Amino acid sequence: MKNLILAAFIALASAASASNIVIMVVEDPNNYEAPRTMRDFAEKQLRPLGHHVTIIDGDKPQPHHFAGLVEALKDADLLVLFSRRRFPPKDQMAAIRAHLAAGRPLLGIRTANHAFIPKPKEVVDPSLVPWPEFTQEVLGGENAGYETKGLPYSVWVPDGIKSPLLVGVNCANIFGHQSLYKVLPLAADVTPILFGTPLIGPPKAGSGSPPQPVAWIRSYGAKKARIFYTSLGAPEDMKIADVRTLLVNAVNWTLKP
Image 1: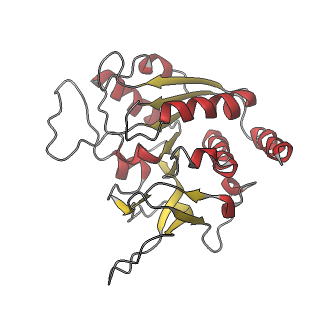
Image 2: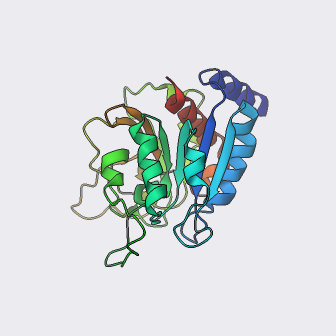
Image 3: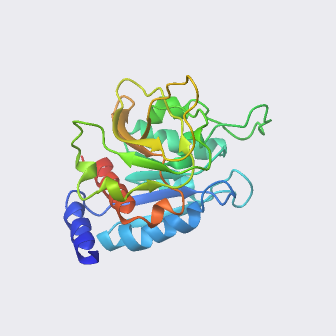
C-alpha cells in the first residue's frame, strides 16, 4: 500500500514542476499543531517531489509578525496558509495581497478561514492589518462557527463530481476528527469537491442543516489566482494518507499554468 501511495505521489508530481512553496503557520493552542504537521508534510510529501519549501512561523519576533515573509513571497509560486487570527504588519499584508493580485495561487487549510479576522470587540494595534473580508473575497466561503464542535464527521464526494484533486483519494478512509466548520453559503463560482456530515449527536430540531462543504476550489481576482481550501487539518486528519494525497493533488492543481 505504501508503494502504491508513493507511486501516486510521483505520478501526480508530473503535473507540476518543482516550485517555490511558502507555508505560513502560527504556534497557537487552537491552531491544530500546524507548525508540526506542516513541517512533516513538507518533509515527507513536498520536498521529495522537488519543491523548495519555506515555512514562515508567525509571532516572530513578536505577535502577528511573520519574519521573512516579504522576501519569501517575492518568488513564491504558491502560498499555503494555516494560521488563525493574526494581522501582519502593513508590508507583510501587502506582500500577501501582491502575491494574489499577480495571479499566484493560495492553498488554505482549516483555520485559514479565519486567518485574518479579529475576535469580536478585539482592539487591533493600528500598525497591524486585519483582513476580515479575506474569507469571503478570497476563499469564497464563510466563517460561521461549528456545525459540530469537537465532534467527528464523515467525508464524502457529491454526486457527479469528478475532479483531478480526488485522484488516488478514497474518501471512505477520510474521517474528520475535530469540529465540522460551518462555511455556507459559498460564492457562486466555488466548486465544492468534498462535503462533511456529523457522525455523533442528534440533529438540531427544525434546523434542516445542510451538509457542510469540506473542500473546494475557485479562482480569485483579475488574474484568476487558483484557490483551494479545506477545513480538514486537525492533527489526526493529517495522519490519514488520503488527506495527504488530497493536499498533494491540491498543490499540483494550484500550480498548473
